[in-house]
Length: 57
Image (tube, rainbow, N blue to C red; front, side):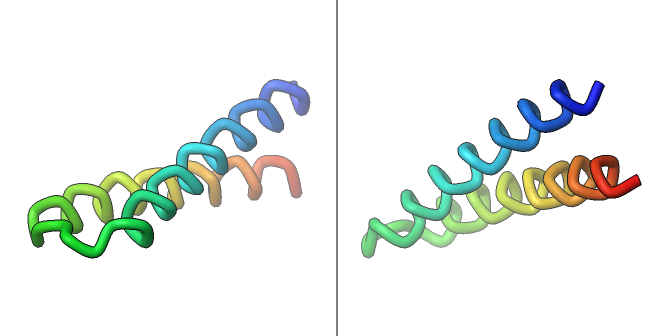
């Protein structure tokens, strides 16, 4: 089970990195783009935190 958690965690960390690069790499994003990506980033952060907590337990 721990292996599957690690795989999921790595996937979500990869997705988070992609969103951060997209946001930080574009200087012409609209407010809507920033908000939508921030919402997705928030969801990913919650999932990452949950998986990290599961690994600690």
